[in-house]
Length: 190
Image (cartoon, rainbow, N blue to C red; front, side, top):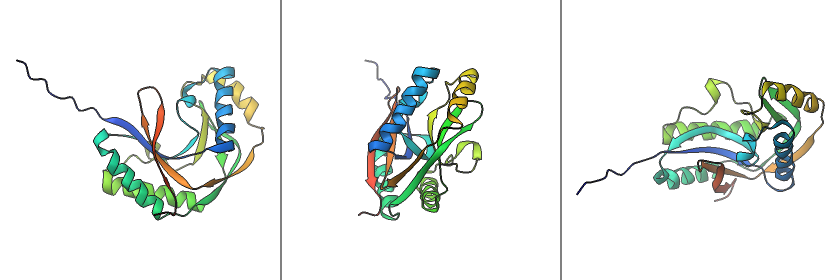
């Protein structure tokens, strides 16, 4: 009889603010527009969100621990309002909804980053060491340079001005096809 070793596979996760309700629907519609008009579908693989910690790999057995840490962060941060204002880009492929600067959002992200370092031994909170630039992506990775140019012409002068109350944070997991919210905790609650 041959003994089979169990294969331990790490999954991809990230921490985020998932935008729901009317604002979530509005953002989803922008993502669908980018997919239909500019053939950029990658943004459709995640719910509308603001990333608080870049994707990282962990075993599924760590999900309870990550959820409990997220609860701790939630308890120590109060709900706050965000203002979604206009569109912006990271050339040559990313188009996003910009956010008005927010001290509570910056503090929340710092708290997530700190706990992730200390408790989960994660050191990739931001992209390539760049400072935190909160935004809501509507098109990225699979947006061609030509598509970006055309899409940016459409969106660079388009106005958007909405307010959103952030009252929860979430843990998302990649299922090999899309990102799924697997845990959500309220802010300021115990």
